[in-house]
Image (spheres, rainbow, N blue to C red):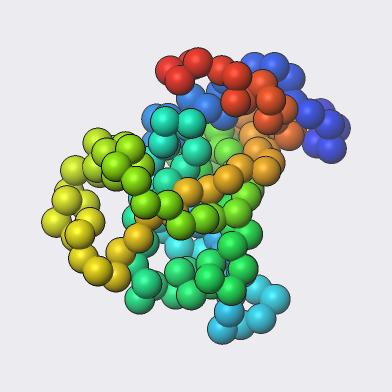
Length: 161
């Protein structure tokens, strides 16, 4: 088994980016403001912006928004297509970073391209865009194949890797 404390082999950066580009929903985990010390997970649609950073359209009424305001550190967990016979062979990626509010036309366009149905509520006053400033990525290719992804390598990959 790989030493999971080391940076993953080069191919993991490509695979992690490919997985993030192919899925548009994951589990966003924030720090619970209601139950101190516990993570709070929510199913969350996302898109990638022009810098390949996850972006979210979130209502101020949502519990995870309250959590983000108190502590912007979060993680996004995304899985590939699961094999019902061997769940541990499913690729998965966890992106960790801080969620920051963003308000620009490029972010809006990227999000609506991935989630056209969001056009129905994107202009509601209580919705805002947030972007994850990624500080770490952990990728699991399957059972026993995992490691931290080199961020410089991830960022240098072409958009459609």
